[in-house]
Image 1: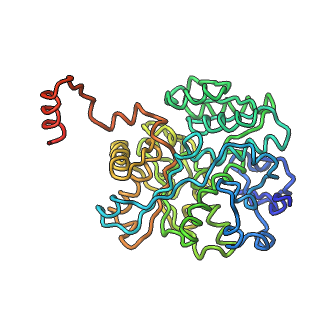
Image 2 (image 1 turned 30 degrees about the vertical axis):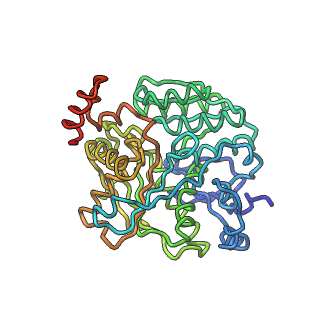
Image 3 (image 1 turned 90 degrees about the vertical axis):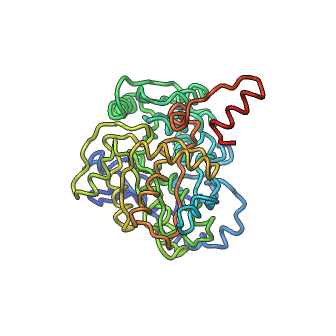
Length: 417
């Protein structure tokens, strides 16, 4: 069966003009880059195949478990890295210590290149292969870049990756290990994105940029599909995600929307989008009911340090349509959340991922999320992505002499034993 048949059409998120599913447009010709297209599905047709029985008998344990939901043919899905079906943990300590309602962590740092971005990248490389491309490119603050490089390497695609000069060393190391053609731009993310756009147009590469290619939301939506299924389709009251360009939270909404339209869930969770105070254009737009304005990129959370988001409409709609909200947290709160998540739950999150937990704490303390609410916090990336920042959350290492006397002294002073 050709699973792409469930794609009905493409629709501009700004003017709502529709395009046939065979269209090669990534954005609306009339609305430009703001007119990112949304992929619309024929849910009535999909219902004939996709129901709870479909999941019971499905033996796949990766994102291609949800192939009917995805706009690809599926020719290469058995050759890719194993992306998705990441763990969903219920809190062992934080929930109890805070006196909160059920709290879950979706650990997408367990993906092959250690971030949620693998969900978009594996879809992009499959689509590029199906369309006959040999080179695929993107700009990124780090995670999308390393994700694309790893997933493309698996399928033998060439990659050209553009990153700003502030990209963390851990992510640069991944890019080099995966054999990417790495372009480190002497500028910020805006400069990096614009250069990648020019290069992609000039050389005719496949465009993986999440803020341009509508397939990327479709890949990211699988995190919501998994959360729902792992909770036996009893979805949380709130789902919390950090926000940079806006593509991830847009994907989370799209996944739950698909399930709701298929009648597999009774409601769509409220979405909480979290940004850093040092770079929070969505928060300002949400609070002041005004268009998004460009901001400085001044936060340790590099993966969400996006001064001019490229997917504003879908992200804002995701939050407003669910009666959710955006909020921002301080960098010191992000560092604290990293430490709490690691020491209390055994989960190591990079700063952008820990921002979600910091946002949950703030929302809970302010009464936005109540003690009765069930919440899922998405951990979008592993802490090994940025060990320099992670180490700043902890005390400096002290060396102990190789004597029992010095060990006892250290334990008394530092551990209290």
